[in-house]
Amino acid sequence: MSDADVPHEERDAMVRASLAAHGDTGVTPRHTLFYFYGDGAHDDLNEVARRAGFLTRGQDDCTILETTMAVDEASFAAVSTMMQSWAAAFQLDYDGWECAVVTN
Image 1 (spheres, helix red, strand yellow):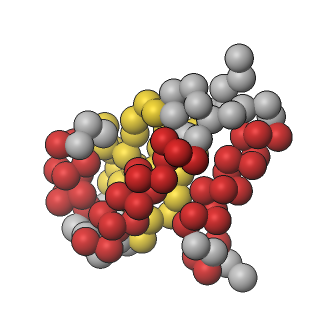
Image 2: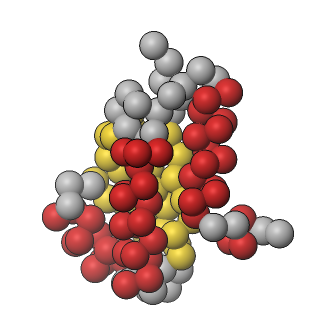
C-alpha cells in the first residue's frame, strides 16, 4: 500500500505518533509545511492560502504552504480537512505535512 492509499487522518496520526516518540505533544506552535503537487491550479491555491494567512512558495507543479501552528489532533483536524478540500478544489494532490519536533 502506498502513502496515497492511506487516508490523511491516519497519515496525520502517524506524524503525531512520531512526534510523541520524541516527547512532543504537538500543542506548542511550530513551523509547519503542507505540500501540494500536480498540474492543477497552483496560482489559485496560492491566492486562497495567502488570504487564509499562509506563506506560499513553490514552482511549476509544486506548492508549499507555511504557517506556525500547534499540530495536536484537536488543533490540527480542521486544518487537515481544509488542505484536503483545497486539493480537491484546485485539482492538486495534497501530499501531507511536516514540522519540527518541539519539546518543553
